[in-house]
Every structure is written in C-alpha cells, then in structure tokens.
Length: 505
Image 1 (cartoon, rainbow, N blue to C red):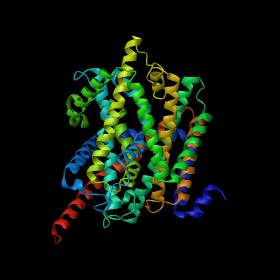
Image 2 (image 1 turned 45 degrees about the horizontal axis):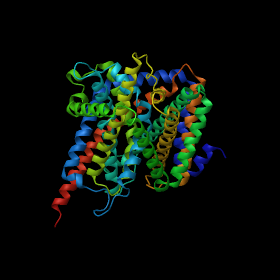
Image 3 (image 1 turned 90 degrees about the vertical axis):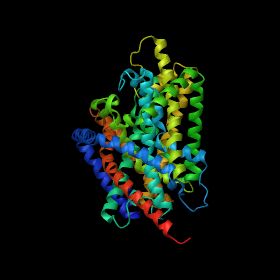
Image 4 (image 1 turned 135 degrees about the horizontal axis):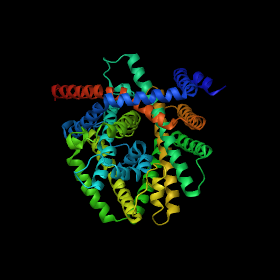
C-alpha cells in the first residue's frame, strides 16, 4: 500500500487534504516558470495593496498586548485559578524561541546589520551603525513577537478557558462561524504551516551547504542538502514522537544553551563595551521611535521600494508563521496568565535578539574597519556568519558549532510544526495520535526533498524564493482574520467581565 493509500485508509479526511497538496505540487512541477511568475506578481500586489495595513496591524498588535498586560485582564490564567505553569520559565522560553525564530538569527546575524549600515533605510537621524541596529531591532523585535503572542493568547484562551479545540478557527465565536468557514481557515493554516516549514528547512539546509562550501570548498551539492533534510526530519520525527516533555522541551533547552555559549564566545572576542554602548543607543532609539517607525511616518519613511523588499516582506512572513507559532505557544502555556505570556513572549525574546544582533553587528563593523575597505564579504546571507567567525579565534570549531546549531534549530522547527499539524489533523487534540505525527514527518520530509529537487531541475527559477513569496500570499487571509480575532476576543473578554461582575458573590 503506497503512502497516499495509507493516508486515505487510516485518516480519510487527512488523506483527502494530503491528496490536494500532492496535486498542488504536481501542478508546480508542470508549470514551474508560470507558477513562479504568478506567485511573484501576487506577492508584489499584496505588499503594494496591503503593506500599510500590515504596518498598522503590527503596531495595533503591540499596543493591544501591552494594554492587556497592564489591565485587570492580564491576571486571567489559562487554566484553573490555582494552577501552576506547566513548564518552567527557562523551558517555556526555550521552546518559544526555538519555534519562533531559531535559525533565522543565525542566517541574518551579520548580513542584516551590515546591509542596513551600507544601505540605511533613512539618514540624518542617528549614526549609520545606530540606524542599522535600530531597524534590525524593529524587524526582529516586538512586532513579530506580537503577531505570535496575539495568536497564542487568543487560541490559549479558547483552549484552556473555553474548552475548545486547539485550532485557528477556535478564535471565532461559536455562533458566528460556519463549518465551511472553519474548515477553510484550518486548511489555510495547515498549508501555510507546511510551506513555512519547508521554506525554513530549505533556507537552513542552504546555509549549512554554504557553510560547508566556505569551510571545505565542497560545492553546493544537492545531495548534501537532501542528507541534512533526511537527518533533520528524522531527528524531528523522533522528538515529536517522544512528545513535548521528553523530546521538544529537551532539544529546545539544548539549542538555547548552545546558542548562549556561542554568543558568550563572540562577546569575549569583540569590543564588548562598544557593543553594549551601541545596543543601549539603538534600543533607546528603537523605543522612542517605535510608533513613527511602525507606520513609516515622516523622516522614518524609507520609501516604498525599501518597505516592499524588507518590512512588508518581513511582516507578511511573520504573519504567515504566526498561526503555527502562536498555536504552539498556546499549547505550552497552560497555567500562565495572559500577562506572563505577553511579557514573557514579547519582551524576553526581543531583548535576547537585540543583544545577539548588537554583538555580532558591532563585531562585523570592527572587522570591516580592520579590512579598510568593504567589498561585500558579508552580502551572502548563507555564508556571512561563517566569514565573520573566520576572523575570530578558533574559526573551525565555531563554524562547526554554527552548523550544529542550524541542525538543532531546524529539528526544533520540525518537531514543533509537526506537533501543531498533528493537532490540527486530530480534531484539535493537544496530544495527537503518534501515527499522525509520523505521517506529517514523512510529508514534510518528502515535500522538502521535492523542493530541493525542483530547484535542481529548474535552475533558471529560484524555487526557494518562490516558496517564501508564496508565504506572503498565504499571509493575507491571516492578516485579515487577525483583525476579526482581535475584535471577537475583546468582545469575549468584555462579556466574561460583565458576567463575572453580575454573578452573586
């Protein structure tokens, strides 16, 4: 019995959905150039038509979450009144960060701060170094985590306070939604998670390949990428098979520990005082300028070209990633208050990211100063961090450390995403069937390999870039849905407060 027959026999509805996804990939194989052109045009249209809406949505999400955190509603606990958090702060934040960004900070650690300094989004406000870090903070800080946390708070409230299944459609009121609408929302969430995950695996394996090529001149071999896809999916499958406590939590804690060790090694080898001074100045500017930055107002408007290539792109990407990450955060947040989730999920990971970019960015600026002339050594997003570490002590060990971290973060992306996909497919159960976990692991592995082979077969088309642009297309429904989610969530909070105040004491 082949894979598709197995899916249809054991899980008819899931098998039907997988059949649709298989057909979609088949169409992409047949019409690659036309598909790529269509995706490119659709993503450009969405960014042009809805770009400012994305900006306002991001600002509204941050302000709303902060308002919720300081309001009496911030005390609402996801679970029983006396229930303790299911996971410690260390375990919870490790899982949250590994699922939410992880490999991204390795990919952009050096390349983005340098790119922002060489081509600043605006001038005449701060020094180029401060502007570069400030805008990098903006694109990796409060707003993306606000998208994640908003989904987490709303889905977590529906799950642990209202007893509803852990699905994106649970964010809508019971009396308002129809079965067709719910199914459509959940199917789009599944598709977006799949495409987001295989895009992340593709980027991660490309960086691993780039690192190995930089270190050993091995060449960009698709066979190496396929090997790492199989390895990553096998480890991720084992992790999710073991479950959150024995698999996902343990791997996430190891990843963050290894990341902190790498950061400590870099801190001791760069100008730490200058890095801290740059961090302080950039962070202060970011907080003070946050609102005009968030709406691209006045002198903080970098222009439509820059916004389209960077901010709109990032916001659409974070929105597309938000349903999966938000649902995962909701799943691990039982026993925490809304205030704990918001402050822990908004402030802690943002500060960690800011410190990371500050030390790597300042270290890269110092290397450029020593070189005397910059010739684009950090332009390649896949090899920039390896070039940077090559200028520090023990480069071979540190570069291999980065490759190990890349594998680890991709494994934690796979295991958390497969858990979420399995929950979606098992009627929103928080402990989905192990058969479903295995099934989705195989699907992700096959889809990722197909993406690599597709890119190898059609080298005139940037297939990986097309997959990322497809995420921009699928982000639009969630950008529109988020506005409805916010409205109905506040309505439910108001109704709950009114009900509580009118009940006899």
